[in-house]
Each structure stands twice: as structure tokens, then as C-alpha cells.
Amino acid sequence: MKKGQISLYILFIFSALIIIMIGAVVAPMGNVFVSKLYVAGDKMLQISNKTIQNISDPVMRGHINDVLDTAMMAQENNIEVTAAIYQYSWIVVLGLVALIMFIYTRQLVELGGGFV
Image (cartoon, rainbow, N blue to C red; front, side, top):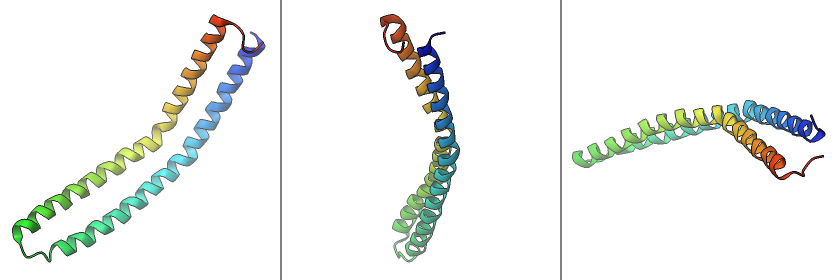
């Protein structure tokens, strides 16, 4: 095993640890942020619902209520999707780092040069 190969292994392990630590710290912070946005948005939708009830035209009020209900359901779906993205994004980043390092080592093997 050459010195360059060991350097690449160490670099991959170091970058993997950094990515996992960022995922362990940033992902929960992202979930808290999205949850707080959900709470704030829910309060705004509840206030809007009270205002909508004052509309005298029943057809218009029913249409706006349907739109508001759709917004509430979409908000719940959005928080689930973003929580999953925050939770599992480190796996994608780690896979990309591994792929980049694999391609780089193939380039070193095929073209020569690089670490000695």
C-alpha cells in the first residue's frame, strides 16, 4: 500500500466523520427550525380561519375554507418531508464523497501521478 492510498483512506475517514457529526448536530436543529415554522404557520392559518368566518357570501367562504384546509394538509406533509430530508441528508453527502474519492483514485491509477 502506497503513501497516497493511505492518505486517501485517512481523508475519506476524516471527511466521513465530519459529515456524520454535522448530520448529528444540524439535522436536529433543522427539525426544530421546521417545527417552529410549522407552529407559526399553523397560528397564521387559525387566525385566517377566524377572519374567513366573517365573510357573508357562503359560496366564497366555502371556497376559501377548502383552500385553507388544503394549505393545512400540505403544511403537515411538508414538515414530514423536510424532517426526513434533514434526518437522512448526511447519507447522501457521504455517498457523494465516497463516489468522488473513488473517481479520483481511478484517475490516479489510470493516469498516474497524484500522491507519491
